[in-house]
Figure 1 (tube, rainbow, N blue to C red):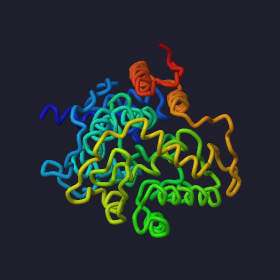
Figure 2 (cartoon, rainbow, N blue to C red; figure 1 turned 135 degrees about the horizontal axis):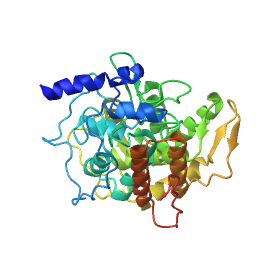
Figure 3 (cartoon, rainbow, N blue to C red; figure 1 turned 90 degrees about the horizontal axis):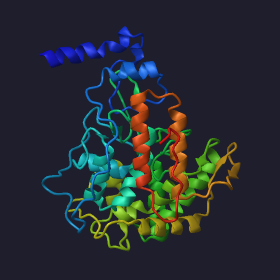
Length: 375
């Protein structure tokens, strides 16, 4: 009873301090845009503030195994559950590898993508922290895998925040300027099916996925005046082109030689569901695999980092090398821009998370570590 009374009183703190719009602030929502006083007001309402946490250990078992099993049944989304632009994370939440509500810690995400898809530890850690440092809550160590609308019609942001990590020319999500950037888009999925029928004999292949991505990029250049395709988006866009082949094919080989059926693809993209009897890939998806498929997509499409200056006017950014090191440095600098005046507790958490983020950067080639909040 005392705990319930405290929780009720805590909810009124933002009102008492003159910030009624911050009442019922979600624990997973980032603190970007809040003044130090507002951060302190929100902090008094939070149930837990563990701050930055170390990387979880790699999973021990990386063998192929059945992952749609009795302990990970498919449970459809409940009202209020959060889903986002990544069909893989959505599926992991629907099967219980992540919390079903779509709110998780970085450590939970890193472990879940290893357990559920056999994504390699280093790839999982880098991608997770590249998103978390800009979209997560550094005090609570929580992040939403996407977005939802609350009972009072407010948007709850997470990985769907445009321009931080999520970006344009998604496989099955519309560009932010043109529509909803985290909800499944049937028309775009139909385009994926069209390329599968055109050059994949009805299957989604590496080549058909690359063709669809090229079409998406060209369409965005032609129709989206705000189209943005610089690092990190250029990297994630090319990588996600072949992620369905790497992770959505049951018992996929080490070299990702098996093709993806359209029905299985729809299950992931639209329903957030493993196919029946689904086995994760046979070997971990390592940085070498990431680079191999990234290079293949990049060489075939050859859309260099850049952005539109009005619809149809794509301007290449020749100073953007499109590397993982540059992605790390851009995300660190963006984090510093998002938090120009953090409270001491928030600054300490951000600083620690940026150190952890650097630990995920591939050691070769050498990458300069940045300390925008000091060492």
